[in-house]
Image (tube, rainbow, N blue to C red; front, side, top):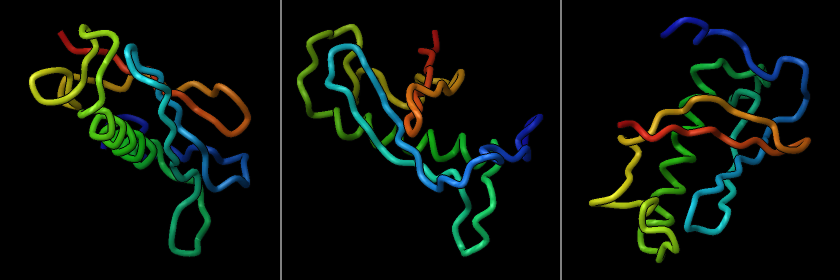
Length: 109
């Protein structure tokens, strides 16, 4: 686990689930869910590492959902032969409304 990976996130909230919003050039906005609290009845905040894994899974879900969808911006087309999860890195996560967050993704060179 990297530096800070074990840090607890969302310590001061009782909300257990948030929306993740992905706005990608050439595609309609996509929304998924991620957990801010742990499973298994403990209801403890998740760690930074666990949060990053959840965000990565939602990004992969987005990429898979959009793979067969026509893009209006071919420079940002996703899917085989185009942009895939291996081409991306999560830079940050920004809160865009009370219950919604948006990842900032960077395209690797």
